[in-house]
Amino acid sequence: MNSTWSRFNITSIVLGFAFLYLPIVLLIVFSFNESKLVTVWGGFSTKWYVSLFHNQGLMDATWVTARVGVISATVATVLGTLAAITLTRYTRFKGRVLFSGMVFAPLVMPEVITGLSLLLLFVAVGLDRGFVTVTLAHITFTMCFVAVVVQSRLVTFDRSLEEAAMDLGAPPVKTFFQITLPVILPAIISGWMLAFTLSLDDLVIASFTSGPGATTLPMKIYSQVRLGVTPEINAACTILIAVVAVGVIIASIANKRREIQRQLDERAAQRG
Amino acid sequence: MTDIAATAAPSTETATLPARLATGFVNRLVIIVPYLWLLFFFLVPFIIVFKISLSQTAISMPPYTPVLGFKDGVSGFFAGVRDLNFDNYTWLTQDALYFNAYVTSLVIAGISTILTLIVGYPIAYGMARAPATIRPTLLMLVILPFWTSFLIRVYAWIGILKPEGLLNQVLLATGLISQPLVILNTYTAIFIGIVYSYLPFMVLPLYSSLEKMDYSLIEAAQDLGCPPTGAFWKITFPLSLPGVVAGCLLVFIPAVGEFVIPDLLGGSQTLMIGKTLWNEFFSNRDWPVSSAVAVILLLVLTIPIMFFQQAQAKAQEQGR
Image (tube, rainbow over all chains, first blue to last red):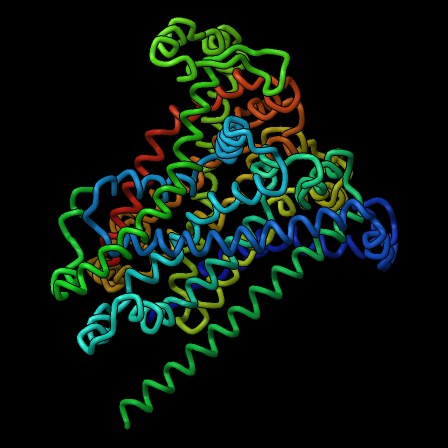
């Protein structure tokens, strides 16, 4: 679709992106502020980063968050991928409507409801609130996001590849691991990353389902924010943003490389 | 929903019988594992919420009286039914606070959704008409803030909107205003927070429906003498409606129950149901009443959620 990119279009994009990025940029800038006041510039300093690393509570919370994130994202990716396969491949089984409802509803469900209901479940089955319960809760709400990401890739997947493999005698499970999985792998990886960042970000569900000794980083940040805005929180946020940004950029470069490689392979195959 | 069931997967039918039997077991496992997980961790909890919303507050741990179990057999169950307690719901109707919180939440979410649409549409439109080479980069730039923490992005606005914050500093310095604007801890701050946080959810579905559009339709309309604004309202907007609906639902539903934004930006003067539920649970430690609040909120949101699910299923069907 070739079209004129009018001045109006460019202006709206520039303004839109300014709106999206300016607050984050300002937050990062003021994390290097010498002054204790967050909004008055007092010169460049990295002292807040130093004091951050001496804040034991914050460090513990980071460690908890990282472990919850890795474990829940991994389990959620497996479950979400299975759910995506179910949604795209098995179109006739009892309770399919209920199943797709249970996959899509958590995407928009207000977090307070999800958090409260999971907590009441854990209390009902007698599970002590803590690391395990937060992880279980995170698996549940992030697996639905994974399912949607993987499903969008599966929908465009060329089934004839699988059929060819099976015609040549490959059993279905082998076909899945050798043909299907490599093709949908990029979607699975971005599903994992999405699950991980969602877990990293979550305040509400974690607050409901966590217990003593399993305070996550957002819970810690939230309790400090309530006491007032400090440059130290800005520094913590900046580090979080940097970690996520680096992860996303590396993933997208890797994706691009794979894409280029695939195109080269295809061209070679056509010539071959 | 039934349309999807009709378009059954063809390939399993072409497979040979032993292969089908072997696949049968794997197939079942693929369905059963996520199914049971969601049943246990998503559906069952709602039933428990409903159950506890009918119990009474008690000073114990957990802080509610037991209701409706099968511990005493069937007769015990029916005895439990007699003891069911709707006080929490009557309480919700008697105290105007809750009714106001529900209505305010719906109104705030509605206005925010329209504002997000107004802000998001030009961005999505500009992206869809950008040169094809830079479109992936623009898409990436819209998604990137979504990856950074929600809490952080809301927090960033506190420093901007405060009376002595950056926005007021800029406005005072340029002489546009002589008194600092009071934005933080008002509903205006909540609107800004919701529009900002949910913007990617609006832009992405809008973009994907605008990108698919055939722009020769507009050229044809303009060739036939239709003014650009007329062409927009008669062609572009109706064709982008699936994106508009999806985007609006993605913003509206979570915004109704939003907690972080009204809590951090709205201060104590503003009223929203997510915050009410949170306070009822964490400050008052009244689990039965907060369960009742959640049940009503869920009922209010059932219709939009069903719309959302149907739109998702439809999009999935078209993707095939």
